Length: 129
Image 1 (cartoon, helix red, strand yellow):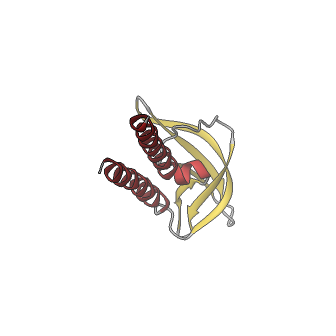
Image 2 (cartoon, helix red, strand yellow; image 1 turned 120 degrees about the vertical axis):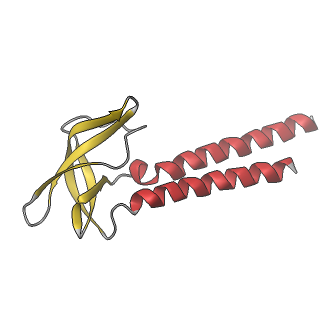
Image 3 (cartoon, helix red, strand yellow; image 1 turned 45 degrees about the vertical axis):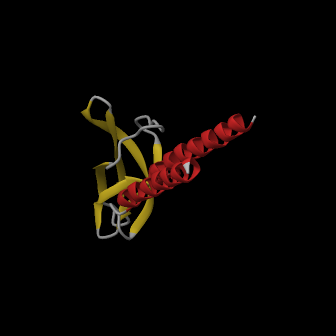
């Protein structure tokens, strides 16, 4: 029964991470991808740092946007080039478009789920020995 409960919790964590990511990806419907540059940071709270990115759309307009997701594991430096995805109908809705930013919830969820399941396997082996 413990294995079933642990597996269910692990699955819920993975699903939650995927949902978290889909919410982030939905900030830029019908995205256009381009190169941009980190030009600064917004710090709304002590442990939150949102990169401010600048990029140019094909019509030559320069956009400066604060990303909706703060940086956590990946730290960018001012002046660093980054891949940007922005909403086709509203370039002010832009985000950093990298594996970590796009799927950090799923990546963390998979890591936590793997840890839970590995702990379950180790515990089972210990009780059998």
